Amino acid sequence: MVSIYKPFMPENITEGINEILYSGQLAYGKYGREFEKTLSQFIGNPDVLTAATYNQALLMVLSILDLKPGDEIIASPVSCLASNQPFAVKNLSVKWIDVDPETSAMDVSQLRSLITKDTKAIFNNLFCGYAGELDEVYKIGKEFGIPVVDDCIEAFGTEYKGKKTGNTGADMTVFSFQTVRLPNTIDGGAIAFNNKAFFEKAKLVRDYGIERANFRLQNGEINPNCDISIEGYGATMSEINSYIGVKQMEEIEVLFAKQKANAKKWNSFFEDHADAKTLKINKNVNPNYWVYGVLAENKTEFLQQMKDKGFYATGVHINNNIYSVFQNDKDLPGVNEFMKKYVAIPSGWWVNL
Image (tube, rainbow, N blue to C red; front, side, top):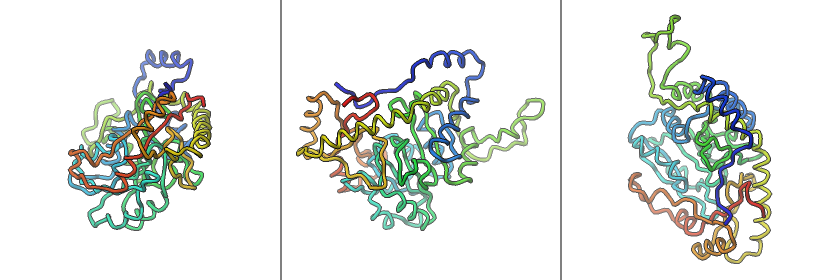
């Protein structure tokens, strides 16, 4: 059975890890900075910070935006639970937006009508590496003075109008480098910024709110006059995780190329397939093909058909508006139709079609 996910790990990586283990420098350091530089070069954005986990990266975003309990945000429930659970942690008021059932993308035609004077942020999920009309989301955000966050938990390497996610115009873009992502740092995340003020604030939020240049006196003791004025986390990525990220980025282009080659073969396969059709892809979008998405008329039967062919197929996620923790089980027709039909099939670097 060809698996839907498979963790990638470069060969000959253990020597470098062992060197770090006994170097005396385990916390964020030279490899942390190198990984951030490599990510910046790949994305095309100089302002990138890594985090120890995707969860911490997203919590950092909520703190950077200074969101408080009860604050209103707009988000799609068609996403990984990890993308929405931090909203509950912060006790935010989530307004769910419907999706286009043919693409999984936020239904932008509804966005303006959901915005109120209390809306503090728009969270735009690029589900399973696919994207909608991003420029329109950014335009509406600017029109109302509301920050837009692209949630790219599954969309590192996806391109929009020739630019990679993290450099397409969102105020902030959040990435996951958890085990089944590319790159995979075992666990980790990153934020790319299109807002210098947010970038500078993030440096403090990632490190307990500490301004390191003033935190210690010349004798090494903590400076009592260095105030901590904002909330923060211990969210820096370790040297081992960063080193793994650096080594993975050396092979990232080859891995993405293999996934896209697999997707072309799936395109041909589904041209004449009566039981399922490929997701409608925006003409401006080049997905990373973390998975290959289709819409099946009979999802249960199709899942079994693919498994009988030796490919592990899955719905991946269920819509998060059903969970009581968000206190908003709004019925969304587009979400219902999409989730009823959506199936992901393997398209990763390990798949040989």
